[in-house]
Image 1 (tube, one colour):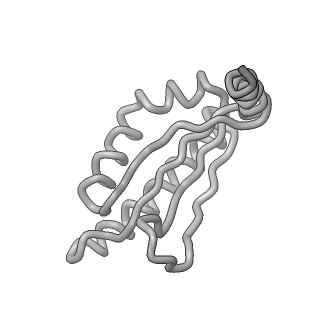
Image 2 (tube, rainbow, N blue to C red; image 1 turned 90 degrees about the horizontal axis):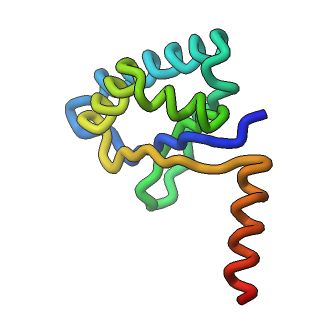
Length: 116
C-alpha cells in the first residue's frame, strides 16, 4: 500500500503556450499510466479544479512507496516533464506527501511534540 505521494500542481498555462501545455499534460498521463502498469508506482490521479482565485488550477497526485517515488524523481523522463511544466505553467511545484501508515506515524510524532 502506498505510504507516500508526489503532488504536482500548477496555476495557469503561460499565455501563448497553451498547445504545448495540453500536449505535455497528455504525455505526462501516458507516462504515469505506463509506470502504473509496470508497477513502478501504485497509482496516479489527475485533478482539475474549479476556479477559486487561488494559485492552484490543477494537480496530479502520484501514489507509491517512498522508494518508488524516490526512484521516480531520478528518472530522466520525470525530470524532463517537470522542467517542461516549469517552463509552460505558472506556479508549478512538486511536493512530497505522506499517506496511510506514514501519515499516522508523522501525526503521532506531531502529537508528542505539541503535548510537551
